[in-house]
Length: 101
Image 1 (cartoon, rainbow, N blue to C red):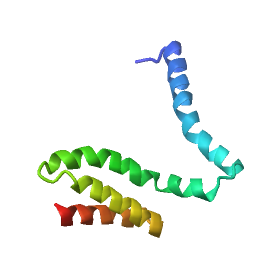
Image 2: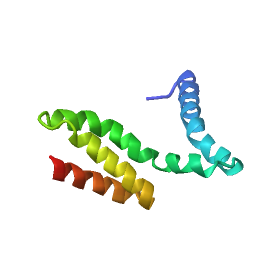
Image 3: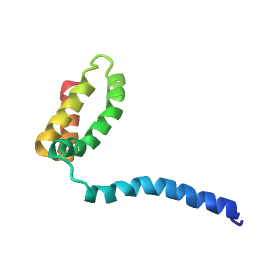
Image 4: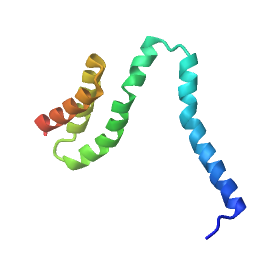
């Protein structure tokens, strides 16, 4: 099976379109100075992204107690904000959901 030249160009183009937006922030971050009040919320962004996926599942998982997922997310955000430890924040969210469920 041979690769046609037009497919090779398409493959390289898709590779560049995917790679450039992923690598560009690393180069821009070195040159930018970000205020600390902006940088700290950006560091807890992974925790918030996890919450976006957990809240709908948590609400559907516990229909009798729909507050469990928001409590877990709030616990995770507070613990991550105070300790700057994302793993501890996720663990605390699981523990809070377990305690309130």
